[in-house]
Amino acid sequence: MDKGRKPTFDRVMHGLELLKKHRVEFNTLTVVSATNAKHAIEVYDFLREVGSGYIQFIPVVERLPAPGGKSTGLDYAEPPEPGQAESPVTRWSVPGEAYGDFLILIFDAWVRRDVGKVFVQMFDVSLGIWSGHGPGLCLFLQDCGEGLALEHNGDLFSCDHFVYPKFQLGNIMNESIASMVNSAKQKQFGEAKSSTLPKYCRKCDLRFACHGECPKHRFTKTPDGEDGLNYLCASYKKFFHHVDPYMKQMTAFMQARQAPANIMDMDFDALKK
Image 1 (spheres, rainbow, N blue to C red):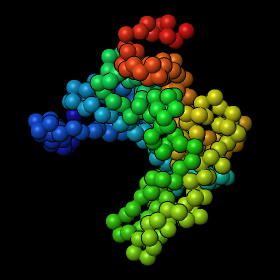
Image 2: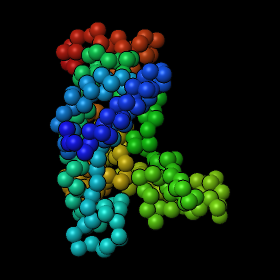
Image 3: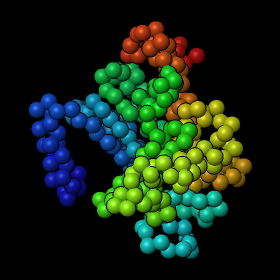
Image 4: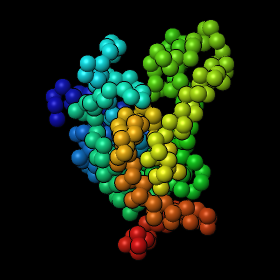
């Protein structure tokens, strides 16, 4: 381990031990990058071993400003717009398919031994979708606009992924939060998620689960050249297709008032046929 990072790591581990000592539940959020995406099981086993019962994985997707593009004074590109010049992703961003592979490896370990013991946000979200209870996460809703971001100075933005000048709704010192949340500008922002979905996504068999994911990641082209395909599309297709039979079975257990954890006793080869 890098010597400069070890003191920070030690402090984090000390903090976790204090939480466990005093029986304080905690949630871990792990950023999935080009580096750790190659070590899915090691990452998952480490989190289990340190006692994390509630796990979130967030993919790193950051774009550099477009070559020759207008300078905005920012280190990274703003959210994409139709017809905008393509911006390369940073070298540390998770590759487009690697995030799906990462999730699948962890899911296969989880579904065999940890259902009902370890709660992985992405797996809970998937079960919510398949069971008809909804994703519980804005990324996979048909429309967005409910995850606003309030800055320390009172500025309110349409979303915490869109904290850029053009997405500022106003300031709470001048307007009420309610008026800004219910404004035409915010309504248009939320509905744009579905109204700008490419045709390729509209006819996708996984649209019900994905809905194009976060608009901030829609900066690649569809196979037929249309703008607006999500950079992580290949990952979500892999993952959602992979978990489909498991989610259907866990949903069946829930409908029969049985625990989804019963899936750990099943013949997985038979389940996937």
